[in-house]
Image (cartoon, rainbow, N blue to C red; front, top):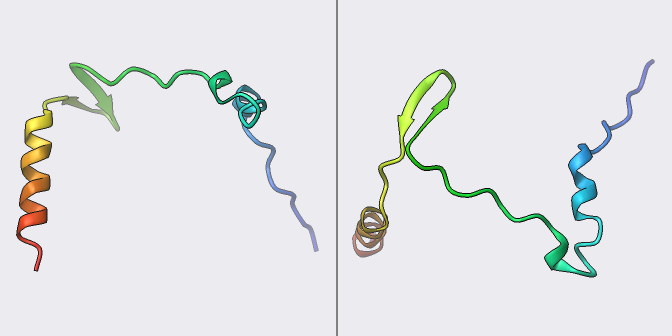
Length: 65
């Protein structure tokens, strides 16, 4: 019977090796997506706004029974 080991971690884990001692040593997150982007072959436009999200959140909170 053959066994396999777990795969090694991705190489970017090295970017976070000193995180416990210095949390500011981790790289900054990427900027938010603006405009259009491609996902699984389809073109999408970023149209959500904070007001839309706030309205949806308020509706979900107010109408929960």
